[in-house]
Length: 397
Length: 86
Image (cartoon, rainbow over all chains, first blue to last red; front, side, top):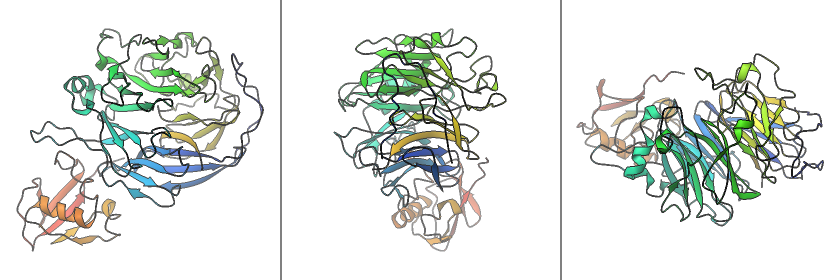
């Protein structure tokens, strides 16, 4: 059970969180872990959560996503320690599951140079204008699309086999420890032909023609010292989010800082420079407000020296901005005060659409934390789970 | 021929540990297994026709790494989950 005290969150710049309670829609949290998936069903006030699971116990679940277009279809990106990757689909909120008939897989190359999907890492539903359309990003980097609600998948666009992109993908050693990834697939809510994605490594890419062609969007992003920032291979965006209330604005948590871009500009601005120096602006996750494009949140990690990837000084805190990154406020009420050395992965922090917004994050230590007031006060709503890979918030339709 | 199904793949066989499949080579037997239990082959063999890292095949007790290996109807195929740790 969760009971969070009403408290003042961030000082608002453009829009203050209202005190109106969330509507009657029931929020559900989708928790993907290294050893299975769980659903947490919230009551109307998001005070209490009923846990449902495990689903797929022992399976590595990289992402579990509820289709916002129908509020009942779930897709789960799965593999096990022994078996190859697949996608499972449920149309009854996880009571029953069916495996994809054709999971994401690269085209076969008879000369032996072809790549094989190790795991599907990211799932993104398209907009209501394209019912049944989903995108998937994989490790190693690949982009796939389903037109039938996740039942069958095919390579999408030309990037998977494009010579230039194959160079930018780099090798397995150029990516994250469990393989390079294509992630942060974003569909512009105004135009489903306008797409973005990120690659670790490989930079940020944009298409305005429905994926027929992509171009890089890396100006202004920094890379590790000594490398050429003009080369996409050296770029490592960790998480990119588009603002639903202003889709011309995107935020990004990068290996080298926190950024914002306001289109049609093609240049990212490092807004993480305004973070406290002792904390820095390194992390994996990025969360945006559903109705206020000036508001965003991150949960930084220790990116100093050997990159411990823990909360800085063992004192975890969310940092939020209400003015597009001009200033940041520490939001740690209710979080451990010391000796908490976990961190939060790129898919493991999210916001719901409530008013005030609910924020959620899952830790590498298997704890799930929630705030009903936009970060003003935090409470642990589940613990003892396996290492959490992803947390998504949705609403049951 | 008789095929031993390891526990991670028994969700495809309705929980059964042994299945029947036909074919003149290891690859063909896996193809037939996939016809009977759709999806099972891709969990063992990737899209480039390589055996997945933690799956092993034993024919009459001898390990095989070759999908083209000829098999006889009386052979016995054991599919094994190799150690993956964690």
